[in-house]
Length: 359
Image (cartoon, rainbow, N blue to C red; front, side):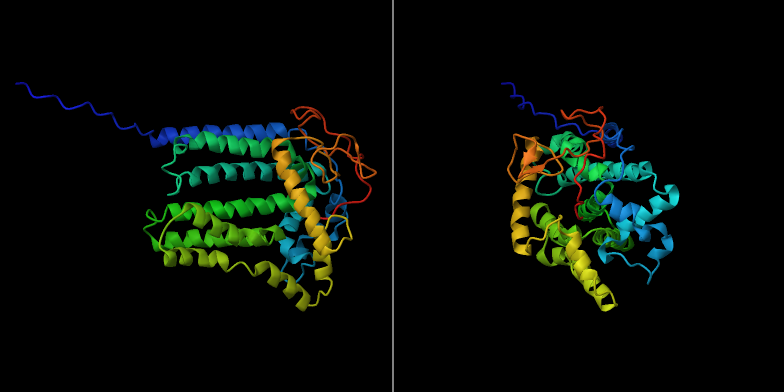
């Protein structure tokens, strides 16, 4: 009697060669860069608006690079890095706005690439590498980066020069999480203790740069902890040891502010308070409640784009151009028409509210 043949076995999935993986990643990155540059191709001609006038055009600090030497800096202590980039812009091109806008566009595109890297790394973590979506991680990362770089809601952060404080802080913020994820995922490959130490130093350095760019980076150590808990694994003691250097940066922002006051700058707290309000005298608690409404509104605008204006009421979508008796004006949207598509010219910079906002 003939022996029964063994049942056919399915062939294991073919792994994509590393070289081809790199080529596909490079093509995705190139597409994101091209989309970002095309979307903001006509942003370079924008004028200084809103707080650009106070923080750049009329700011004496940025006119002298010597102002940034130790002991001579008189600006907000937690915005040193951002103002240093404005000073470098001024040194290279004076008050010609094209250079400032170009740097903003480059920062924004870099942030989109960091989003791509973060998504790719996250799908390699223990919690997601077995996911059915892991095979499509490159496509998901490319779509996420493309939405980040070209969504109309981003235009104010890019074309409004003084918003570089936020976008550059985002560069270091997301960069810190990316470096931490890469370091954790490469633990087994880091056979040299010095390479591991260098990776840890890079994580802490980018975190400090974020905290010296804008105060929004105060939450960065907590974001790294959340990433560790959500996507990574390991013994509790080992995880705490890896998190400890990042958590040690948590007091940097409050200590820098208090240190400036102790060093003979009694007005620093008032300037910090003014910089974290948006042209209002509301009490802090009431101001906080309005900001919560605004956050919800912006999350809605990520999905449903309507009434995109520089001044708007907290209602989700307004039907008319007036809001609370004040004329709501369209924000400059370089690279985007009023219908939201690339290629049209931006509105005139002169069509802006008379009172500047505060960053």
